Length: 372
Image (spheres, rainbow, N blue to C red):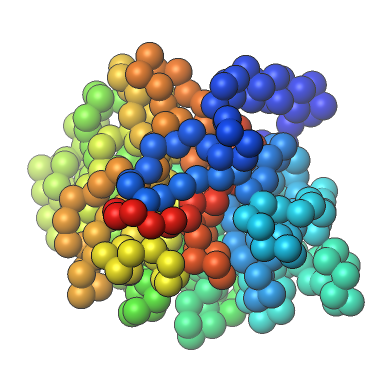
């Protein structure tokens, strides 16, 4: 959502209250990490930062949803902290995702996709094109854009509701287009209630997605899920969840027949958003090719869960173990919350960058040695 001025003031006030005592020792962040890792604050003062991505020249770009803009965070002296914040493009409607393709940034907004081009190379977009502008905007309104190796553009479009039969076939799925001009619209995959995170596996170019399961079936059902998405597959929502749980309100007994199982199941209501495979070269060897997932955290569970970054071990291109905690500390023992991780990106320096849309931070997690 784009906040009015008063809303921005409330957001900033909440951030100040929640972060009291959270960051100490200069820029070092008080997150719990495996031995040998350290988190620092790469940038602060952002308003609702969502997905993040590096440009070909190594500058981190952020979809700052609360401020309706895309910002650049260069680190020219390579000291692990952004030197400045500059606006690449503003007056955007709730930008959530961004991806660089063929010289332009493609940004997911509730109604579709906007392309931004910096023609003169001054760090400011001087050309914008509305590629898609006909998505319905009610309900889940984040739009995640990604390009396949063959040039097709994919956009995830979340459901309009918790559990219902959609009128628009594009909802609760992933839509494909022939290319960056938005032509040739087709349904790539369906039955994904809210596939907020999309990423390509570097070793295989296969598409992986995070999916947020439905609410109001209790604290522990249905699980949130991670999928290796197959073109043409129907993943079951709203009648079947995680390939095995028949919806008690909308399903028939055979609703899960033929529905693909999830590749990874996560705690219900943990809200997986951004995900990325580690393809850097500075983490220990055991992390190579593993999948990192940002859990935004629960809003409707009796005991809060999520609010962390997890690691899913991979071997031979497939999940090879249960998810393990990687970065935590945003959820305190008393249930209070100081931040909500959203976007993930591996930097040219091999660090893992994490956006936090509650605190307004970008974190930089590095391996400094001493075991894992």
